[in-house]
Length: 557
Image 1 (cartoon, rainbow, N blue to C red):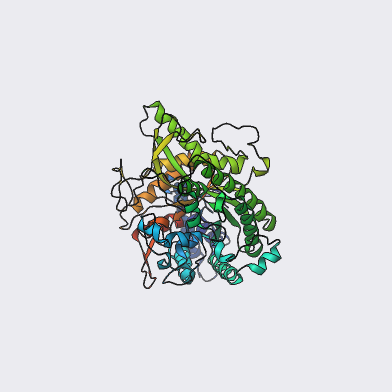
Image 2 (cartoon, rainbow, N blue to C red):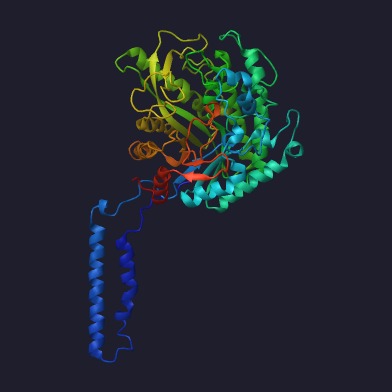
C-alpha cells in the first residue's frame, strides 16, 4: 500500500552519473579522429578537468543542507485520491435512475420536503458519473495526477429484489442484476488501466428499499417513547438483525464477482453517522435528518451493534472470496474539545463524546468490545473474540470540530455516557438561524480546525492499524477557502505522521465533482470540479491545481 521512504534523485546525483559516463573516453586514450598527440592530450586534459570540476560541484551539492534539495513531505507510493459515492454521483440528466433505495424514497418524500427534512433537490440531477465515468477517471488520473480512486457500489442496483432465503453464490447470481455488475466491472477496469488503485465501498449509506422502508420506519417510530425498545416491524433496515445476514451475502457476492479488479475493500461508510443522524433526531436540538429521521435511544445502540456485526461478517466473507485483498471500514471522527476548558463538566463531556462517537465502533470492530450499555466498562459478555480484528486498515473521514458542553446527567438512562451536547454546525447560508461561528467556518457551517485532523489521526492510529484519510474536504462554492483548507489539513496530517508516528498511507479528497449532499441536496459544493447539470460538463476549480501539485510531487506548497 505504501512504497519505501525514498527521497528524490538530486541534481548532484544526476550530474555525477553523467560525468562518470563520459570519463572512459579520456581514460582509454584520445579518439582516433584527433590527428596530433598534443592536441589529443590537450582535449583529454580539458575534458578530464571539466569532469573533475563537475564532480566537485556535485560533491558540494550533496554536502549542502537538506533545504537546498528539498525532500518529499510524503513517501513514494503514498495513495493520493478523490472519493465519490454511488447515490450522490451516479445519476445525471434524469438518466440511470435507481428508484429502489431507501435514500431515493427519503429524498423524494413530500412530507420530508414540506417539513424541510430534505432540501427538495432531486438526486437525478446529479453529475452523472455512470455516463461520464471515463471523463472523471481521466480528470483524476491525468489532470490531477492521482494514483487512487474511491467509489461505492449501490446494493439496490446489484440486488433490486430481496435476497432473503437465497442461499449460495450461484443462487444469488440468478437474482442479481448482472448488467449492473458488468457496468461496475468496466468502471473498475478503466480505473486500474489509468494507473489508479480502486478503493471500493460496499455500502455508502443507502440500503435497498426491500430491506429498509424509511417512510414506514419513520411512521412506526414516530411518537414511540424514546427510551423504550423500538417496535418490531418489517423492512427496518439496520434496526433488524436480518440486515446483518443479507449484508454479508451481498459483500461476499461482490468479492466473488469483482475481486479480480479490487484489492482494497471498504465494508461500511461512517456507521456512527448512519446511527446518530438516523436515530437521534431531537427536535430543535439535533437533527441529522437521515432516514428514518427517528429519535430512539435503545434504537441507536441496536443500530451500532448491528453495523459492527455486519462489518465483522462482511470482513470475513470478503477475505474468504478475495484472499489477497485488504479490507477495512470508514469511520467519521470529530475533534471534540471542551466548550470551556476551565469547566470540569465540559472536559468530562468532551471525553465522553470522544468515547461514544470516535471510539465505540472502533472498539467493537478492532478489539471485539461491544459496549452495549455505553458505560465505558467492559462487562461480562461484551467481549466478542469472533468480532475482533475485523479490519486491515482504518479509513478516517474528518471534517470539523465539536465544542462540547457537559451536562449534569445523561440524556437517557440507557446511555450513561451521553451526558454532553456537542456544537458542530453554526450559522451558514443553509442554516441562517444557527449560532455564530466561533472562529472560521465553511459554507456548511462547520468549524475549520486543522489540528483536529492530527488529533483524530492519533486516536485512529492508537489501534495499531494503518490509517487512510478516506475523506477530507470543504463546502466552498466560490473556491476561496479550499486551497488554505487543503494546505493546513495536509500539514496536520504530515505532523501526525512525523511527530506522532501515525502510520498514514493515503489521503482522499472529498470530492472529485460536486454532488448530491444527502439531505442538503446541492446546497453544498465539495468538488474539485463543478459541473453543469444540463450538459454535465466539468469545470476545474483553481484549488484543484494545488492538490494536483501536491499529489504529483509528494511535497507541500
